[in-house]
Image 1: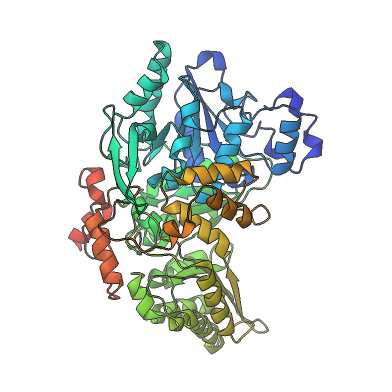
Image 2: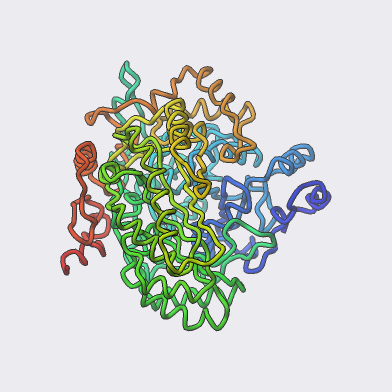
Length: 619
């Protein structure tokens, strides 16, 4: 529970439930009976963090050990932070109310580049030096993980250790090592040297980075016995990996207030812009029986009335309809809704629509990503306009009157015709609604198009591509709006300044840490929130640190260039990514993994195994 002195602050802040703890299913242990205390930090607000599946899984896994107590910590909102600083209250963990600085291990989930300043702010609010080199004691050890760990270099000076890959099994050895070092009085440097020998753990301070005169990376050189390459770790069998029997149930509404269940990892599609599609390979599926049993247990333990079946492409789960049959047997009588995010237009079937009609209806969302077939082929989306129209027709005949379509602007090889093609495709979907003889009387159609700005990411075929400048993206947004000729189509755009900053840090190097620290010290935090984002402060930070942000985001990189993340191995062969990049510029597609293995190399992380590889051999 929260510290006693916090009680007087709660009436002074919005949403005090963010800071009280004590929720249903939260785990409280006797701190005198554990060997390690672990503060699991999410560098965003409570509502965002409590919606994140990864923190729920690792919270449960860590607390399954009787010698470890894992507690949750979220970034306090501006009003609460001001009160804490004014009253001398350090950052604390929700379960015990104890100061974070007193924990043995402080872990941060790095899911988005624009949370970086919040990491620094939370360390400072905890009363700790923000740079690893200034924290001399063995504990607390500050460790980071998550999607952005694939290129942690801009944040490397702030972390003692970075974990690469899936943490359910790899952290046991890490806990054991820290526990042993504490028991025998080892110092921090000894622990770090030993941690660097554990599979999947990267210790940035044991690697020296040198640069060419043109600013590109010359080499990343390990020392003190650290490996030349650190390889991410993966879970082999999702049916056997620990999964929470309970979720902590928040007192206030969060972003995804429901049971979220992961049904598969990885993606078969190979969309060339999609980092997650490559980072989470090899493809592994969980069995319908396991999913069904775990979903039922979670609903019983939490009281939630909605289940979201989560994956990068839910309709690519091979046993989806069999799974839905099992789930619907008990969710319909108990009035529990089932949500299927990440559906694809090329495998949305009549039978799947029939099953969706048995539960509460929500809008349908699909992602064509590009407006013309040439550009969809260049990004390897492997979706045709006919498939978009067929799926829309099916949905409208099934009674849906709202469809949301996701697109991107700024994709490699994009032309003005491709931009206008987004409006044309949306108009085609509108027209299909009015061709339906059974359309609901008195109801119109709404086609919403959500348009993101393309950001090149590490470990994708487009990791070498330049990102469109802000002016280029704004011009394309204007062109798209001018190409829409009906109020039936609603368009929304991601902010280009936010995408610009995301692009800088996605492919950045260690020198950017100076700009991150400068921006934070001058007031930047909660950068992913519109009302907190300050692009002027960031531009000032880059100037003050002598850094050109366009060098990182809008420069085409040569295939021979040493990339800041080349010493980290996420399983995808660089030669494969280069080949896919070259095919993109010829608008050539690559079949998805179940049709033909493209040899990405990710199966080496799983003993040569990949569910999609086995399925492609069978077919």
